[in-house]
Image 1 (cartoon, one colour):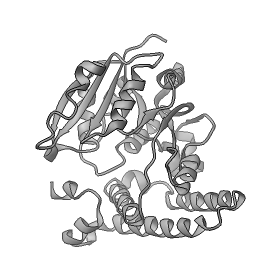
Image 2 (cartoon, one colour):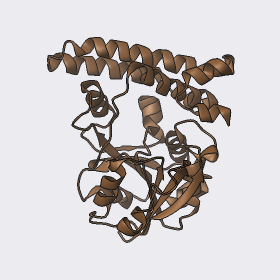
Image 3 (cartoon, rainbow, N blue to C red):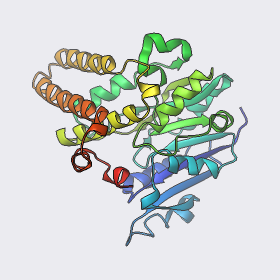
Length: 307
C-alpha cells in the first residue's frame, strides 16, 4: 500500500515514556508523514515537549487546559491533518518493535476496514491482575468486526482503543469525527458509528504496544465511574448493547486463569477490584441523579464536570 499517515498524540506533563515512544516511532519500518503533539499547557511547564521538535521532528500544537476534551482535542488534531490515515496514541504507549505501523496498515488492504487498533501488553512492572485483564481484552488472535457481530459480541463489537489506533480519514470525516464533548470512550463511539455505517473494525495481534496501569481500588472505582458517565451520556449507543455481561465474563475468565497459574491469593484482589469497578460503573450510570459535589468526589476528571 502507498498512503499518507499522520500520528497525533495528546500530551500532558509527559514523562520518559513519551521519549521512548517517539524514539521507537522513529525506528519504525514505515514512518508517519507528520507527528503532532497536542500539548496541554500547564503553567511552569510550557516548554516540557520543546526538545522533541528537533530531536524527533515533531510539531507542537498547544492546548489550553480548560479546553481539553478526550473527543474534542483529538478531533482538533484530526482537523490539522490531510493525510489518508490518522493514527492516535497516548503518551504512555510504547511500541514493542519496529513493525507497529506496518502491522496495522496491512489490515486496511480490506477497503471496508476503517479502523484498526493495536494489542496492549502489560509492562514488566504491571500487576498480575492488570496482565490478565490485558490478555482478555487484547488476545493473541486477529479479529475483524462488523455490524453483524453486534448481536453476538455486544459492546465488544465496537470496542477499540485510542491508546494506539489508526483511522481511515475519509470515513472518519464522513461520520463527523469524534464527539466534541465526552469524558471517555470517544474511540468506542466512533467505532460504533463506523460499523453501523457498514464499515469494519480490525484488531491486529502483531501490532503491539506496552501499556498498563497499576490502579489502586479507588482509582479503579473512579475510572469506571467515568465509563458509566460516558455510557449514560451516550445511552443511545451503549444502552443498545450488553456491557455488564462482558465484565462478568472478564472476571470469570481471569479467575480461571489465576487458578490455572496457582495465583490463589490474587483471587481476593480480583474480587475486590471487580467490586470497586462495578460499583463505580453503576454510580456513574446514575451520575445525573447525584449532587454535583458528590460527583466531583467520585470522578477522576473533575475538570470535565467543572467545565
